Image (cartoon, rainbow, N blue to C red; front, side, top):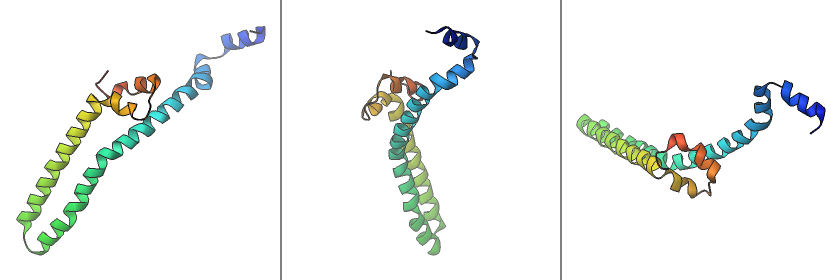
Length: 121
């Protein structure tokens, strides 16, 4: 290493070195991880969205027919179903996170980046 390069590394602030050399590598890994996470998350949110869309006409028809008891019952069933789906999806994400990331050919670095979001080793 040249003398001026050594002096530069010694005098440069560590934060600047991190931003210039280490951060781009880590950021590209995290962007890739969150891309995979977003795709998996959409699989969980699709049925929840569909439940919401399905209850709208049911509630509307029963409200128009003067049956607020059916509207409340439909809302109760949808809320319980949505909670069950969300709880099951959360459990799957935590317990089988490594396997789910493996579907996207995730390497060791991406598995490391996902550690805070999953319970599986």
